[in-house]
Image 1 (cartoon, rainbow, N blue to C red):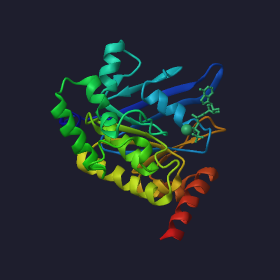
Image 2: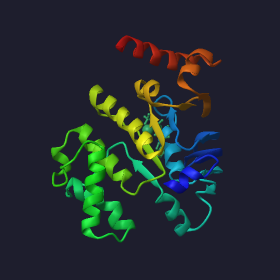
Image 3: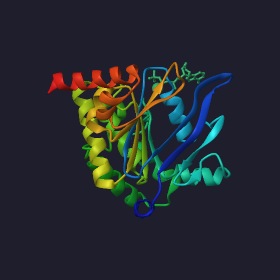
Length: 261
Ligand SMILES: Nc1ncnc2c1ncn2[C@@H]1O[C@H](COP(=O)(O)OP(=O)(O)OP(=O)(O)O)[C@@H](O)[C@H]1O
Ligand SMILES: [Mg+2]
């Protein structure tokens, strides 16, 4: 963690990336970078390729062309060992929370420790308790995921994603399936995580409400254009973008926000 803070240069660089499935190209020539400590959103309408881009950014899929660099190193470059080392520095929160239903919350959160460290049981218990406390779930170690609400499950998944002190956290649709109160609580938790741990955070979302509250910077993907159609701070994009779709999208967000205040 400290290492990450003392280094310079972007945390993630997406350089001329083209990605897709089989013969279908979903995105072409996408380039942007995510700065250290930034809360960065990838937004756009359903089907524009947000999750596909995320899969490329976390190394689950290799780009067809271009490259993804994490802390200056190409993700699809080196061998399996090198890639595994890079992936260990990332925390990932999938849309479904992906907790194992046959394991307690404590066991779920401890999984990455079992896999990547040689800590003792007592040390693991202590770390699990600390991370659960951080996400507001102190004391639920022995509970099974099905006994938790959707919002609590997301928090448990966040504790698991944070357990190895990642330098970067990736979220796919954090607010999907949550009621508005839980979704806003999760937004707050994202900001708290950045503040307390300095973690760089990349959020893939089409919940536009979060953007105004949480995002430092945003890239927007166009479904028809198959590439980036905007980059910037959400407030600037609402007023300044030349693309009417972009303005409409962000102005909608601002109006929605204003109504709620
Ligand atoms: N495994 C797959 N195989 C083939 N095509 C896929 C696959 N996953 C997604 N696609 C296609 O790629 C395109 C982009 O999908 P993707 O899931 O990345 O969009 P998204 O922006 O995340 O959408 P949503 O907001 O609904 O989650 C869509 O046309 C989708 O049908
Ligand atoms: Mg998606």
